[in-house]
Length: 365
Image (cartoon, rainbow, N blue to C red; front, top):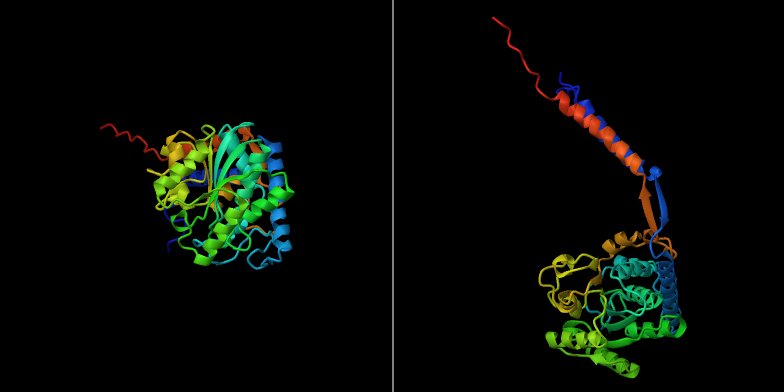
């Protein structure tokens, strides 16, 4: 009767031993490593704490206005989660992604990426914010504040589900709340309605007029150019007015950032250093800045961004500032790794050696 050992050669044990050695060695790798604070630790922590203050300010203002926090959708009661649908909702949205974005340590990720761009005190950066991810917007503004950067910010008010899509409390209201009660002082250079045509064509008429009135009262310039090329040109004129910025930060996926046919899935999250690193023919602001050799920081895919920052996806509760992996650098013991690979290599060499055919000598006649 056949058994599980049928066809099993003695040398196969060496192959199994090599695989087990590598696997067990990998599991034990953490015991032979050490951690140290990551580069720019203090600035990262300051930015995360400032972002936490900004989100707390939004929550206080929301409650002061009598706007309740839905404990089902906003399970951590951050005040940063909008509603499922309203007359200013532009697209579908993923609730878990919106909740993930409320972690203040994304401000530390923004510091890290801005430092990689070479941003220094006094440098100008161009920022495009979508109302779809207000918490990420606050994180970016916090990072810019801590790094003493001059941020030229243009925001679109339209938002996807669960973003800043409550007409009673838009991104403009959030900005005012954080400006009044925190150290974040960044002003909007301009705003647009967002949505279809970047002019709110897919919004309810009444809501669209309400938003226009709100923008007018804020005295912030309104971009309402429906021609796409002219829209981009108007935005670029604002961004480049004081010189070429050291980087462009894009939060979310509105029309202006990548164009109506923008393939955001082909754009890797985080730092995009060149047009070659992005999808071919990237349109909108992302493409315009890459053509000018200006690096782009693209913040949209929350699962990938959470992995990049060493943060959990859809956590309960929200981790405190300074707890993300972005704050730590891990150092592995090279001697351990070399020894592990040497043992595995020896076993594999023995496996190969035993498999070589033996030279048969014919008997003399």
